[in-house]
Length: 342
Image: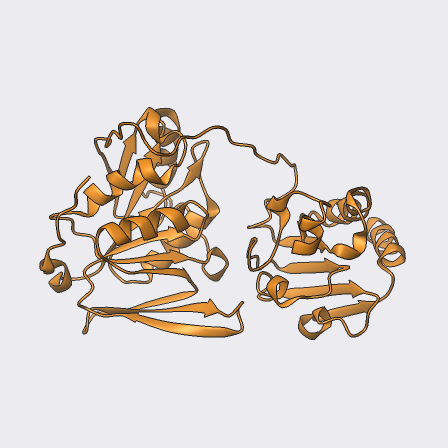
């Protein structure tokens, strides 16, 4: 699909108008998209949402999104082709929405695996830059420029990036832990508009299947309490028998270090770190995790960090608020029993 050059009148628009790509699963808006909506509101202008998917799921997601605080309008498109989020199929729709006389000055999404593929692709097609994984955003109305901050070098430095007036549309993804989730507002009811889907003939990528890990525990990315296990747990059976009772008594999600995931102790969906999930819960408990820099990048913004490790020199103790130098096979069962007795 060919794209026409962007018109320069974007740069002189009266104020920012953000388009937030709202991801959903089963008609329920993802928590990361709710954080992206909050970030978009900090631009100080209008905020529109875009929901894409199969017809039934889109209808449910639209009804939920229409009640969210901060949205001024809502766009949605449904098609059997959109049932699974495939970048090559959905990107032509987003390109069309942003081309020609589009009013949008910013395109925002959660820093999800799908959005990390979608937004840069569309930005490249429209000859615009994309800023990823931002932790703050500020729009200067006088200069019509937008300034972002984002972590680099595994979170050891913060880069400040400014997108000037000359950039007509600014794309960015949002680190969900840096922004609170938007909430429904009583009486909120925004206008919604259906868009015609863009059919893609013979797409180069096809959806085969989706395997989801089912659990009654809180979702790792948004849980208020997280307990994570490391390589010291030896094997998958020990990981399960040690971490699950602790998670159950705390009402916590289970995470893991990359070493534990690579060793096959647990599913890779539980990985916390630079190449896994970034979490910032109220409580993060690291059990048998040494504290490699890649792991710290995914959890060091947690409010309270508790570490259990028998090595007093383990790097995890440098960021821990509470540290216990002990054998985890003795300490964790004792902790579980004391918590049950409360």
